[in-house]
Amino acid sequence: MQFDSIKARDDAAIMHTYARFPVALERGQNATCWDADGKEYIDLTAGIGVNALGFSDEGWQKAIAAQLGKLQHISNLYYTLPCIQAAEKLKELSGMEKVFFSNSGAESNEGAIKAARKYSLLKYGEGRSTIVSLENSFHGRTVTTLAATGQMVFHKDFFPFTEGFVFAKANDWSDTLEKLGQQGVCAILMELVQGEGGVLPLDQAYVSAVVDYCHKNDILVIIDEVQTGMARTGSFLAYQQFGFLPDLCTMAKGIGGGLPLGAVLFGEKTKEALVPGDHASTYGGNPIACAGAVEVLSRVSSEFLAEVAKKGEYITKKLLSFPHVAGVSGLGLMLGASLEGVTSRDVVVKGNELGVLTLTAKEKLRLLPPLTISYEEIDKGLARLEETLKAL
Image (tube, rainbow, N blue to C red; front, side, top):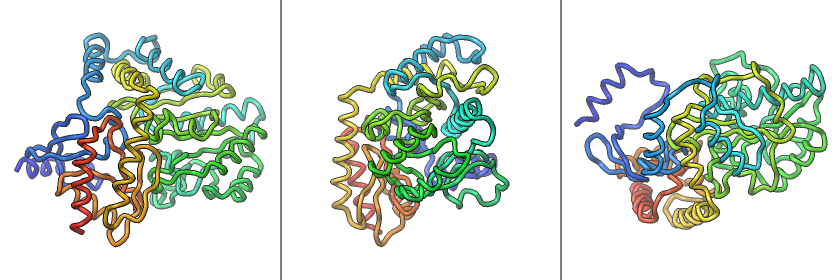
């Protein structure tokens, strides 16, 4: 088996910060992929929400290949057309004013945190820099974004963290109001669907109350759309389903279609917060990654978004009829299945054996399939998942 050789080489060379599953993938097409020994899998993970157009999308490949023959990198000291085109598409689809490109979701959240604190410093002076985050949130693995992450399991072994973060209970307006009312608060940072925390959407009434209070008190609203963005929830950005524009929004994952790309989107209040020298990213806005992003973003239409929502409803209905599935949460193609009598990790492991790739989110089974997954692939993947659940 080729897998044994690949695993041995990986063990000898790679720092194992990931508990890898015993699968070595080699190639794929849309939501179907094959391992090094030729076994077929249906991918319901999209590389943790990254492969928005699935594997080997023809248009995305052509966009990348065309840019490869022109300019692979030049740094942000110069202008490049793909960077501008990607930013223009993001502005058009989001309703925001300016864009800063980064490499990842964590880096995007770092940029938004810096921008929020700079905005408050310029307007109010020192002493107004605290950011309210939510319990059960996840915002990244850097020291600062870990400080903003409301799950203590990620904090152990890495103290001390960046100061200036407090945590409020998600969907608890009384507790959140208490935290927002503390002296020195400049912003709130929220995921509208907590992904790593269990695919848990925030309540509309709670979000509306938070946004209204923050707007009235000039507390910036930062929305982390790293996982929910790029049409994942059935709207281009999840906040568009909640009826407001944030002051800052962070993105990554799906916008690059498979290449590392993140973005900070700036609203009207914050569009002048950062000036040359305040923030930078050597690879941010890379021409190849941005060329891919232009192709990914060009696919977004009302029909495309409606199809994402329709597929999510289709999968949800099927899942609710499966053994061990007690409920399904989420929006669009960002779904979490609550399980009874089995663990989510056991389902993932057994599913790998039967040819379906899935994810966990705490105790839930998480599905983040490519947005372009076909109904044939959905049916095949769900049939294998049902077989998995029946076997446990």
